[in-house]
Amino acid sequence: MRSLLILFTAFLAAFTPVLADPVYELRIYTCHEGKLDALLTRFRDHTCKLFEKHGMGNVGYWVPVDEENGSKTTLVYVLEHKSREAAKESFKAFGADPEWKAAAKASEANGKIVAKIESIFMSPTDYSPALKVEKSGKPRVFEMRTYTTPPGKLDALHARFRDHTMKLFSKHGMSHLAYWTPTDADKGAGTKLIYILAHASKEAGLASFTAFRADPEWIKAKGDSEAANGGPLTIQPQAEGVKSVYMKAVDFSPIQ
Picture 1 (cartoon, helix red, strand yellow):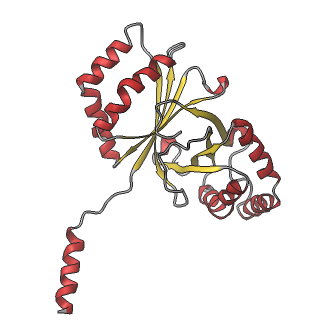
Picture 2 (spheres, one colour; picture 1 turned 180 degrees about the horizontal axis):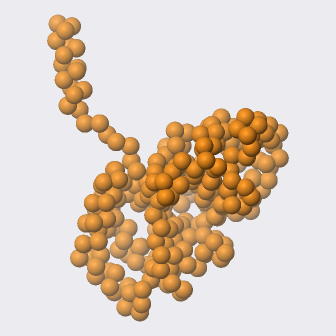
Picture 3 (cartoon, one colour; picture 1 turned 90 degrees about the vertical axis):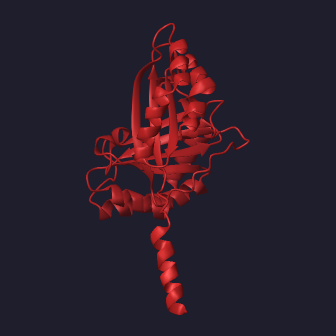
């Protein structure tokens, strides 16, 4: 009897499909001057619905809060796909959809809207919290931070986040949305960490980071990790290795 149970269990395991982890895609649109409102209207009225129709999950949509980061020209958003191949097929079907073609044509009656599109496929890190696609019910801003490491130091950066940084972010009032690494070499696989935090406001975010950087536990963790790895874990100067963009969720964003 026990042998039959073992065989039956093995049979079930052999024929049970393995669910792959989702793939995330960060997309950054740069509009022609004066066209951001038209782009947002197209997403609100058509694009988001069609993404869902073709199997793509809407996660969050944001615009930068500062003009130097593109507050008048930039839309940043994240999609969830079942796989990289699914993303390819979804966008193929989306592009061929008659409703999309009609919406795109109507929205561009006075000229093209989008000047540039950047796409970065990403995987969650092992320490990234489960992504909660929800409205918080309280006003908040989001901060997208991109870290670039010298070759061979990304694992050390991950270890520092896993063991120290995330805990200290929470201690100083910052909320974690998600942490990802790019999957393609030309987008920073092996050298980049991209993550999004939430703050009550930009001012609160800046104050939290001031307190974080002065925390003795952070100072020690940073010093120890750099001593163990032959120097800073992000490329220098720091302005090149650490990029920060404060953003606000648009009205149709699932995450707010």
